[in-house]
Length: 155
Image 1 (cartoon, rainbow, N blue to C red):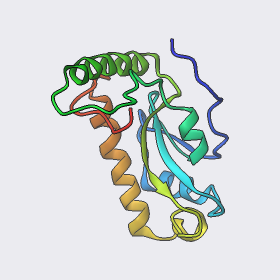
Image 2 (cartoon, one colour; image 1 turned 90 degrees about the vertical axis):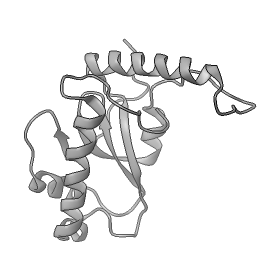
Image 3 (cartoon, rainbow, N blue to C red; image 1 turned 45 degrees about the vertical axis):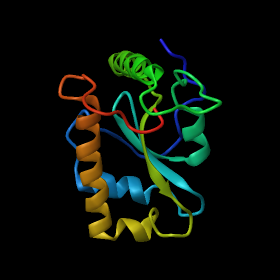
Image 4 (cartoon, helix red, strand yellow; image 1 turned 120 degrees about the vertical axis):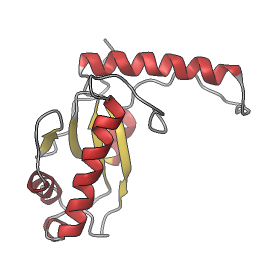
């Protein structure tokens, strides 16, 4: 089991994507935090979606497979080997239902109205976030927790 570096966020609202959820659940999650800092929407390997501080995301990533301090060229055989190892690691974390971050969406910079009570009133925004969650978790985790297709960047 890969150990979590820090405890899971104290975000007041988390959505379990393995159970049915609605746009109203997403609205409650968006409303649950204030627009006073930069937030990121994340999904853990366990299928929990929540808003967390950007610093938390950095500390809750699974370990990198390999560092490339001098960069890497297209076609480098190490990339294929690393991808295979990353898929195996991700499958193990999915099976364990780890609380590490599997998918991290783009940042919601403070003061831009992406979170908070005003953002939760924007039906179109809530629906966009709802659709993103509906599409990203099943696609990333697969119908039977099998990793399908390309993995999210940075994982």
